[in-house]
Image (cartoon, rainbow, N blue to C red; front, top):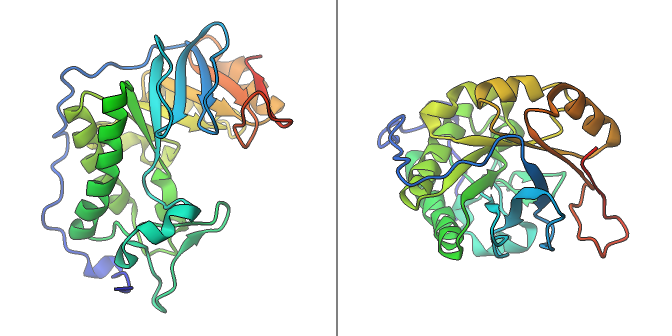
Length: 261
């Protein structure tokens, strides 16, 4: 165990998922330009006017609303690190685990078809749980983790892996979101991605590009008043936009923030 990840030149290209192989029969897409609340930090009764809610996979969906199930698909939660096989944690050439320093989350090793299959098998069990609870869609987070991998993973690795998740989600009649990662939005149909969940596209002037790539099926989370203002100024009549606090906390927290304008 504790194997060093192979570099891009050594990757096996066999058993890659076929592009566009996902079946979308029975998949329901989120409504465009609808009231949205981002509740991945804890579930609470949605405010009036909300039609779309994203919640963590451990929570229940919001009754009567379009419910998105959040899963951390490309990285391991800090408290779940020990539950992953050691060789599925991405390691540098010294054998040290590569960690997303912002959130103290180890990256998962999706650098070969065999490892992608093994990681996907675990994530897909979570997707099964989302479907069993009655969620409408799944939001696999950290699609962009390859950019934090010290060049050990590539964009091709990320898209091949999320294609596996998309195939499984569609088989469970769930839509699947692209989370951030604008640079890969042009591959969304090939990967089987149905809509986007985007953080701070207003702050970074990216909302237009996401809107174009996903035909306005974009739900937006801004973490600053200025980001909210910019997102609403350009796309307030097209996209689903909310301002939340960075910890996406619940209303009983001192740091709770939720604004629509």
